[in-house]
Image (cartoon, rainbow, N blue to C red; front, side, top):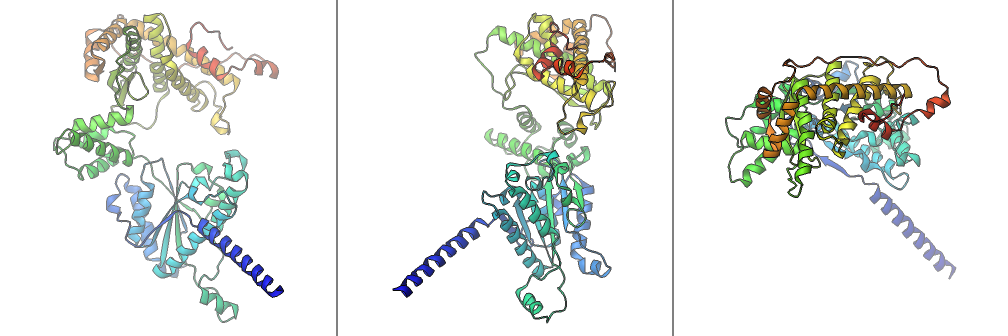
Length: 550
C-alpha cells in the first residue's frame, strides 16, 4: 500500500511538473515572425526617398558579407543598429531590405509582445529569440533580429522620463536587463557538443561568437536607457527622416509606376502638394486614388483622384450638415473668412488651397494652406504670423458678428502653443529660459504672463488687419454662404476686387516685439496666487474683456 501511494504521489507530482513546464513553454513563445534568407522580398531597389540612409545601409550589408576579412583585420562586426525616425518613414522596410541584401535569416518582433503579466515570461521570450538567432547564425554566418517599438521595453531606468506600468512591478526592468545581456553576452559556448568538450577540458577556449545583428526602431530615442546606446549594443544610429522634395519625387514615381495612371500627372506638382508626407502616407494616398477611380469605373487614376484622396487623408471625409441653420452658417462663414483673409495677407510664402464651411472629419469648416517653397525653419515674424492667423477667426467673430463662438477653441489652443514655443522654446520673447530643459515642460509664472501679453498684442494686430480688409472679409463670407467652399484661385480674385481700405497692398510687416515684464519683487506666496490656470490663460489670451493676469 505504501509503495502504491508513493507511486501515485510521484505520478501526480510529475504530471504537475509537466503541466507547469508545458504552460511556461507555451507562454514563453513570443509573437516573432521568422523569415528565411531571401524571403523578405524587399531589396534596396524598393527603398526610396533617402539616398544617404540607403548608402549607410549598404555599408552594413558589406560588413556582414565580408565579416571574415573584417575580423582578420582585428575589427568586430557591429551588434546593434538603431533606426530613429517618425512613424511611416520606412524603418521596418529598411530592416527587411538589409536582411534580403545580406541574404540572412530575419526575425521580426514587436517589443510589446515580450511583455507578460507573469514575471519571468518576458525574459524567457527574449532568451528563446536570441537562442534561435544564434543557432541560425552558426548555420548562415549571421542572423538579423528586428525589434519594432523598442521604447516599449527600453525606457531609461531613472525616473526622469517616466516608466510604464510593467516597470512598476519590475517586469519592465527585467526585460531591459535581459535584452542588454543577450545583445552583448559573455564569450561562451552555445552548441551542446562544444559545452561537453569544455566540461571535460577537451576544448581550450570558447569558439567564435555567432554574429547576431539587432536592429531596433523607435521614434523616442531620448527615452531609451543609456546602457542600450553604449558601444557594443546599439552603437550605430541611422536617422530616417521624412523625405525632402527630391525624395518625395522618387517615392511618388515608384508607387505611381505600380498603378495605371494618366500620363498628364505632374510628379513635381504632387511632390509640392505632399510636403511633410512619409513614404507610407504617399503609398496610402495613391492607393486611395486607385479605389476612387475603381468605383467611378475608370481604369486609371488622375491628378484629381490623388487630390481627393490627399484631402480626405488630411482633413477627413466631407460630411455636409444639412440641418445647419442659416444663422450658424453665417457665423461659420465669417469665422473661416477671418482665417482666409489673414492667410492671404500674412503668409506670402504659402498658398491658400481651400476655404470651406462644409464639415470635414470633426472640423465644421477649415481654411487650408500649402507652402509654396519647402522650408525647414521659421523666423520670429513667421511664427507671429501663424499666431495672428490662428486668432483671426475670433477677431472676425467679435468685429463682424459682435459675439464669440465655441468654434475658436482649437484656434486658441494652437495660438497658445505657438506663443509658448515663441517665448519658452525658441527664445524670441525677451528671455532665453527654455522650459524644454525640464521634464514637466511647464512655463513659469513670468513666462505665462509674457505668453498672455503676446497673445493679446497679436490679436490686436490681426484685428487692425481685418478692419482694413473689412470689404474682403464680407465678400469672402458672402461667397462662402453661396458656394460653401472656395478655392485658392477664387480667393485671390476676390482679394484683387476688394483692396484694403488703407490702399496699402503690400503684406503688412510683422513686428518682432518683445513684451518684458516690469521687475517687481513678489513673494513666493503672491507668485503662486497670481499664477493663472490653463483655462484662465486661454480666456485671458483671447478675450478683450478679460482681466489681465499681471
